[in-house]
Every structure is written in structure tokens, then in C-alpha cells.
Length: 403
Image (cartoon, rainbow, N blue to C red; front, side, top):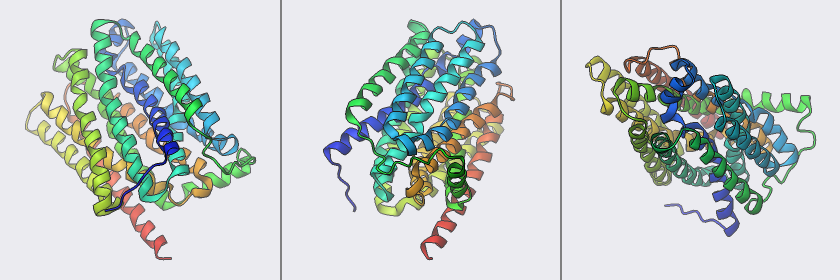
């Protein structure tokens, strides 16, 4: 069995990275239980309310394409600080929103800011660690990520039930403030090879072209993208299925969200265990199969005529378990060939993965919120795409290893 250890600074850096990674989770998930209520309050449609998630995710996905080369030029720390400040501004705008347009603007601003942390946590991890060690400690981030996935909607449900949905965004501001202070005092600049020419159009084009035409990168990125898309689809659809169709309260929805998050957390622990025994690739394949099984169950329950809490919650929980295996191992494989342009590679990887959440949540806006059938078809399609993508990436990685 392989063992990995951390220095004192690496421990502090890991805590900082966790706060960066989870700031986006808070902004994404904490208001989800309030979607049906805000829809009524703003006198808008279910589809437009779902679009508040999609708008956040598309800016969250695309902003790293700018942050990536910027972090190669000026460093990771400055960009992380900037992103958190913009995220706090966006959360403040959400806090005072009075209609759907204001909320759209606020969510876009949040996405622009917090996209920095979602991208940078991977790149800083790549700066500090590599290979199996990176995948191993990424599992700890997954565990923390899952804990916040459980806490955020649960807190959101509490705020909605006892106080106001606006308190959810106030909590986001406070959380980002803590992350900002820790970042300033605990994290050193991890980019030891600043590139003053990183923003030159010719350099940008060359770097992104190098990454985007690499089949190993593309395979792992599309695999991660498909897994994230399933989460986006579940987040967009389940509040309306569980609260509107099945009659749950926002508080009950928030409490149920703990189960998928626990699966993600347990998957993080299991990933570290499996990584040392069966390796990165087999653990990733296991995640792909679990996602496929989740999709089949969702479809099977529909065919059998079942629609209740269990038939939604079980496939959702399995999808989150699958994501814990897929995310940690796919990113390690996808970024492995690009130590010399980690910023650009990490930015593109983040854009691919998170845009999956945008696609998954956006696709669900086109379907009625009456049964789980549309969700089943979307998740089943995504699970097949993800499996094929990781298979292609592994084949090319093996060819490269033998050259």
C-alpha cells in the first residue's frame, strides 16, 4: 500500500484549496430548495428559474478561459483573490434582487467570480502534487466538497423555511469572506514559472490548440463533463419534482440532499482506498459503471410506473457516488501531459467540466416537470457518453506511455 504525507505548508494550502473549491458549491446549491418559492415571488416560470442555475454555470465554466492565462502571467494567488471579491459582489446583488432579471445579473456575476476558484484549485493542486499523489489528495477535496453539498441545500432549506431565501446569499458572502482571509494569509504563490507572454494572442492560441487537440485531455474532460451534466440535470429538476409534484417542503428537500452528498463523501474516502489497490483507471471505470446503473434505475422506475422520493433519491445518490470516482481521477489523467502549461490546461478542463452542468440544467428547462422520464433519458445518454470518452482517453494514454 502506498502512503502519502503532507508538510505543514501543504496542509494549510490544502485547507485553502478546499475553501476555494467549495465556495462555488455554496453559491450553486444553497438556494436550490428556494427555487419554487422564488419563482412564485418573482411571478416567473419554472424554466426561467432553472435558467438562474444555467446562467451561473455557463459563466462559471467560461471565465477560467481568461483566468487560466492570467494565472500563468501574474500568478494563482492574485487571480484567486480577485475571483472571490467578484463572487462576493455577485452574492450581494443576489441578496438584494427584486425580480428575475436582477437575479440573472447577480448569478452571472457570481459565476464570473467563482469560476476562478473552481479552476484554480485544480491548477494549484497540479502545482503542488502530481500523479497518484494528486489524485489521492483530490479525494480529500471531494470529501470536503461533498460535505458542503450536504450542508448548503440543508442550510438553504432552513433559511427558506424559518427566515428568508435571501439569507442563503448572505451566508455565501460570509463564506467567501472567510475563504478570502485564509487565502491571503495561508497560501503562497504556487506558480514558480510565471510567463510574461501568457496573454499574447499567439501564445494563447498555441497553448489552447496544444491542449484541445490532445485526445487524452479531451477524453477525460468529456467524461468529467458528462458526470457534471448529470448533477446539473438533477439540481435543475429535482426541486420541482420533489416539492411541486410530490409535495415536499423546502426544508424536507434540503434534508434529503444530505444523502447524495454523503455518497460523494464516502466515495471520496473509497477513492483513496481504491486508488492504492486497483489504480486510477479502474477506479474511474467503476465510477462510469455506477453512473450507468443509476441511469438504468431511473428509467426502470419510470417504466414500472413508480414516482416517489425513493425512485428519485436513489439514482441521484448513485450519480453523486459515481462523480466522486470520476472527478478526482479524470482530472489527474487529463492534466498529466501539461505541466508546462498547467494554467491553460486547467482552465480548459474546468470549462469543459462545468459547462456540462450548464448543458444538463439547460436541457431540463425544455421538459415538463411531471415525471422522471426526461431526466432518465438525459442521464442515460450522458452515462454512455462518459464511458466512451474515458475509454478513448485511456487507449491514447497507453499508446503514449509505450512510446
